[in-house]
Length: 172
Image (cartoon, rainbow, N blue to C red; front, side, top):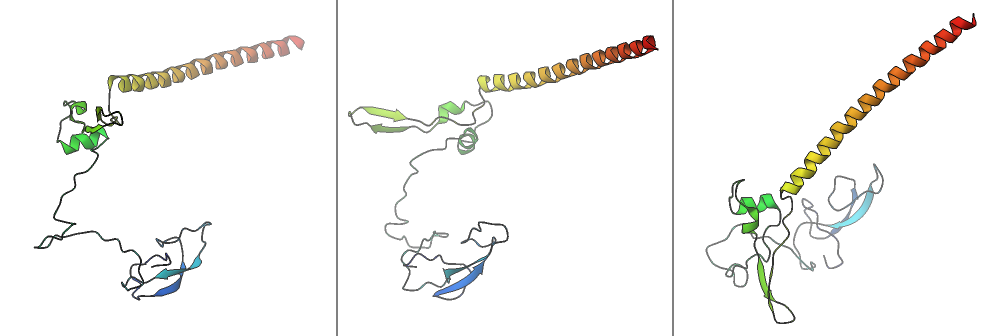
Protein backbone atom coordinates (compact mmCIF):
# COMPACT_ATOMS: atom_id res chain seq x y z
CA UNK A 1 0.00 0.00 0.00
CA UNK A 2 1.03 3.66 0.16
CA UNK A 3 3.07 3.11 3.34
CA UNK A 4 4.97 0.16 1.78
CA UNK A 5 3.34 -2.81 3.51
CA UNK A 6 3.39 -5.94 1.28
CA UNK A 7 0.24 -7.67 0.08
CA UNK A 8 -0.16 -11.32 1.09
CA UNK A 9 -1.95 -13.72 -1.21
CA UNK A 10 -4.85 -15.54 0.42
CA UNK A 11 -5.49 -12.85 3.05
CA UNK A 12 -8.98 -11.85 1.93
CA UNK A 13 -9.29 -8.30 3.32
CA UNK A 14 -8.57 -4.91 1.75
CA UNK A 15 -6.84 -3.35 4.74
CA UNK A 16 -3.84 -3.92 6.97
CA UNK A 17 -3.60 -6.57 9.66
CA UNK A 18 -0.93 -8.08 11.90
CA UNK A 19 0.14 -11.70 11.38
CA UNK A 20 2.54 -13.95 13.26
CA UNK A 21 5.02 -14.86 10.52
CA UNK A 22 7.54 -17.71 10.46
CA UNK A 23 10.17 -18.94 7.97
CA UNK A 24 7.56 -20.26 5.51
CA UNK A 25 6.09 -16.83 4.73
CA UNK A 26 7.25 -14.83 1.73
CA UNK A 27 7.37 -11.43 3.42
CA UNK A 28 9.50 -12.29 6.48
CA UNK A 29 13.04 -13.63 6.81
CA UNK A 30 13.80 -14.92 10.32
CA UNK A 31 17.22 -14.03 11.73
CA UNK A 32 17.40 -17.10 14.00
CA UNK A 33 16.12 -20.67 13.60
CA UNK A 34 12.55 -21.02 14.80
CA UNK A 35 12.09 -17.27 15.18
CA UNK A 36 8.60 -15.89 14.55
CA UNK A 37 7.54 -12.27 14.45
CA UNK A 38 4.29 -10.30 14.36
CA UNK A 39 4.35 -8.08 11.29
CA UNK A 40 1.88 -5.74 9.58
CA UNK A 41 0.80 -6.95 6.14
CA UNK A 42 -1.95 -5.96 3.72
CA UNK A 43 -4.70 -8.19 2.36
CA UNK A 44 -4.83 -9.21 -1.30
CA UNK A 45 -8.05 -7.35 -2.20
CA UNK A 46 -7.29 -4.28 -4.32
CA UNK A 47 -8.40 -0.95 -2.86
CA UNK A 48 -7.87 2.80 -3.36
CA UNK A 49 -5.02 2.95 -0.81
CA UNK A 50 -2.52 1.14 -3.05
CA UNK A 51 0.44 3.08 -4.45
CA UNK A 52 1.67 0.54 -7.01
CA UNK A 53 0.18 -2.65 -8.40
CA UNK A 54 2.49 -4.76 -10.56
CA UNK A 55 0.67 -6.92 -13.09
CA UNK A 56 1.62 -9.46 -15.76
CA UNK A 57 -0.42 -9.97 -18.95
CA UNK A 58 -1.18 -13.69 -19.05
CA UNK A 59 -3.62 -13.89 -21.96
CA UNK A 60 -4.22 -11.43 -24.79
CA UNK A 61 -7.85 -10.57 -25.49
CA UNK A 62 -9.49 -9.72 -28.82
CA UNK A 63 -8.63 -5.99 -28.70
CA UNK A 64 -5.22 -4.34 -28.34
CA UNK A 65 -4.38 -2.30 -25.23
CA UNK A 66 -2.84 0.99 -26.45
CA UNK A 67 0.73 1.44 -25.24
CA UNK A 68 0.95 -2.11 -23.88
CA UNK A 69 0.14 -4.81 -26.46
CA UNK A 70 -0.01 -2.78 -29.69
CA UNK A 71 3.80 -2.40 -29.95
CA UNK A 72 6.41 -5.14 -29.59
CA UNK A 73 9.60 -4.02 -27.89
CA UNK A 74 12.58 -6.22 -28.85
CA UNK A 75 14.88 -7.46 -26.13
CA UNK A 76 17.92 -5.22 -25.83
CA UNK A 77 20.36 -8.07 -25.21
CA UNK A 78 20.62 -11.61 -26.54
CA UNK A 79 21.66 -14.66 -24.52
CA UNK A 80 25.18 -14.80 -23.08
CA UNK A 81 25.47 -18.45 -22.02
CA UNK A 82 26.57 -20.90 -24.73
CA UNK A 83 23.78 -23.42 -24.07
CA UNK A 84 21.12 -20.67 -24.26
CA UNK A 85 22.50 -19.41 -27.60
CA UNK A 86 22.36 -23.01 -28.88
CA UNK A 87 18.77 -23.31 -27.67
CA UNK A 88 17.69 -20.00 -29.24
CA UNK A 89 19.07 -20.83 -32.70
CA UNK A 90 18.52 -24.63 -32.34
CA UNK A 91 22.19 -25.38 -33.05
CA UNK A 92 23.96 -28.71 -32.82
CA UNK A 93 27.17 -29.43 -30.90
CA UNK A 94 29.19 -29.08 -34.12
CA UNK A 95 27.97 -25.52 -34.90
CA UNK A 96 30.20 -22.65 -33.79
CA UNK A 97 28.34 -20.64 -31.14
CA UNK A 98 30.58 -17.59 -31.70
CA UNK A 99 29.00 -17.00 -35.13
CA UNK A 100 25.51 -16.69 -33.61
CA UNK A 101 26.16 -14.19 -30.78
CA UNK A 102 23.75 -11.27 -30.99
CA UNK A 103 25.78 -8.08 -31.47
CA UNK A 104 24.59 -4.57 -30.69
CA UNK A 105 25.49 -1.63 -32.96
CA UNK A 106 25.55 1.92 -31.62
CA UNK A 107 27.42 5.20 -32.02
CA UNK A 108 29.80 6.06 -29.20
CA UNK A 109 30.49 9.54 -27.77
CA UNK A 110 33.10 10.19 -30.45
CA UNK A 111 30.42 9.61 -33.10
CA UNK A 112 31.97 6.37 -34.32
CA UNK A 113 29.83 3.29 -35.15
CA UNK A 114 30.72 0.55 -32.63
CA UNK A 115 29.65 -3.10 -32.34
CA UNK A 116 29.39 -4.71 -28.92
CA UNK A 117 28.87 -8.42 -28.29
CA UNK A 118 28.87 -10.29 -24.98
CA UNK A 119 31.62 -12.66 -23.87
CA UNK A 120 30.18 -16.16 -24.17
CA UNK A 121 30.08 -17.98 -20.84
CA UNK A 122 30.43 -21.76 -20.31
CA UNK A 123 31.92 -22.17 -23.77
CA UNK A 124 33.91 -25.40 -24.05
CA UNK A 125 37.14 -24.44 -25.81
CA UNK A 126 40.37 -26.43 -26.34
CA UNK A 127 41.96 -24.45 -23.48
CA UNK A 128 39.11 -25.42 -21.11
CA UNK A 129 39.53 -29.09 -22.06
CA UNK A 130 43.32 -28.82 -21.62
CA UNK A 131 42.84 -27.38 -18.11
CA UNK A 132 40.41 -30.18 -17.27
CA UNK A 133 42.90 -32.81 -18.44
CA UNK A 134 45.67 -31.10 -16.45
CA UNK A 135 43.55 -31.12 -13.25
CA UNK A 136 42.79 -34.83 -13.75
CA UNK A 137 46.49 -35.57 -14.34
CA UNK A 138 47.41 -33.67 -11.15
CA UNK A 139 44.92 -35.79 -9.19
CA UNK A 140 46.37 -39.02 -10.61
CA UNK A 141 49.92 -37.85 -9.88
CA UNK A 142 48.99 -36.94 -6.30
CA UNK A 143 47.41 -40.38 -5.75
CA UNK A 144 50.54 -42.05 -7.13
CA UNK A 145 52.77 -39.91 -4.89
CA UNK A 146 50.71 -40.79 -1.79
CA UNK A 147 50.92 -44.48 -2.70
CA UNK A 148 54.72 -44.28 -3.17
CA UNK A 149 55.22 -42.42 0.10
CA UNK A 150 53.02 -44.92 2.00
CA UNK A 151 55.06 -47.82 0.60
CA UNK A 152 58.31 -46.07 1.53
CA UNK A 153 57.00 -45.38 5.06
CA UNK A 154 55.90 -49.00 5.48
CA UNK A 155 59.35 -50.20 4.32
CA UNK A 156 61.16 -47.82 6.67
CA UNK A 157 58.97 -48.68 9.68
CA UNK A 158 59.48 -52.42 9.03
CA UNK A 159 63.25 -51.86 8.81
CA UNK A 160 63.25 -49.87 12.08
CA UNK A 161 61.18 -52.60 13.78
CA UNK A 162 63.73 -55.22 12.66
CA UNK A 163 66.59 -53.06 13.95
CA UNK A 164 64.80 -52.64 17.30
CA UNK A 165 64.20 -56.40 17.54
CA UNK A 166 67.88 -57.08 16.69
CA UNK A 167 69.12 -54.62 19.31
CA UNK A 168 66.80 -56.18 21.89
CA UNK A 169 68.18 -59.66 21.05
CA UNK A 170 71.78 -58.48 21.27
CA UNK A 171 71.25 -56.70 24.61
CA UNK A 172 70.03 -59.93 26.29
